[in-house]
Amino acid sequence: MSDMKRRQFIMLFGSAAAWPLAARAQQSAMPVIGFLGAVSPYGFTERLRAFRQGLKDAGYAEGENIAIEYRWAESQLDRLPELAADLVRRRVTVIVATGGAVPAIAAKAATTTIPIVFTVPEDPVRLGLVASLARPGGNATGINFFASELVEKRLGLLRELVPNAVRVAVLVNPADASNTEATVKGVETVAHAMALQVQFFRASTNGEIQAAFERLARERPDVLFVGGDPFFLVRRVQLATLAALHRLPAAFSNRDHVEAGGLMSYGTNNNDAFRQAGIYTGRVLKGEKPADLPVVQPTKFELVINLPTAIAFGLEVPATLLARADEVIE
Image (cartoon, rainbow, N blue to C red):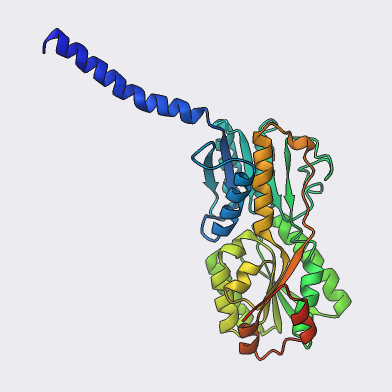
């Protein structure tokens, strides 16, 4: 090879090598969101769409002026501390922790400096995530969507829909101890006031859900109360199918279950909560501090009823309940 050709080759190779380096440099200059999820992308599609919409409302679009590193625990909550630590090692700009209290606690334990935006179903002050709702004070803030606090209302609506119900089965996920404890405490308090008999069933895997329903088939409770848990969200089709198979009227924490064939739900509009989380993440990216951003709490709750499921169960939905429903699926 002549000297001239050798020089041309070196220049060409050097330019080609520089292209990915330039691309990486441009990408590294882009803020990176670390998205820490308790479950899996399956079943979280609408939540992610709402989160991205919130980011868009704040002026950010994935792949254009921000990058997102996703870490999913696939319902194995004991993986969350290491996944959070990995995001910290990658020096992400902000961590978004979703899927219950455990991801938020794992993120908070992993860093005191990287900003955290959480979505949690329980009181974040009690969980130790913030100093107060109005002035979080540390490196974390986010959305509290009241899954645990609505237990009394949801159980009351289920009793209104099935007025003769006395024996209540309650399904909880023991892997999320904090959420389970809050649900158990709330149900026991309400059940005592309503003179209901309560039996708890625990499931944190698909197989355990199947086993729980086999026990339910033997025990024959009047109704089923499903705790608000991200794992149950991604298994909503399985839960709705098994409830229908065993003709067991069930109440859920969010509308996704009812859209999958479940009987009724009462709770926060979670998509709106995730959109707000996206907006808060955008505000943090622009330089606002979590310490100064008040925890957002929902003001609107929705009752959704699946009329064909009610008819299949032989239930006559009271006109007063239909009138109060935010949506009736027909």
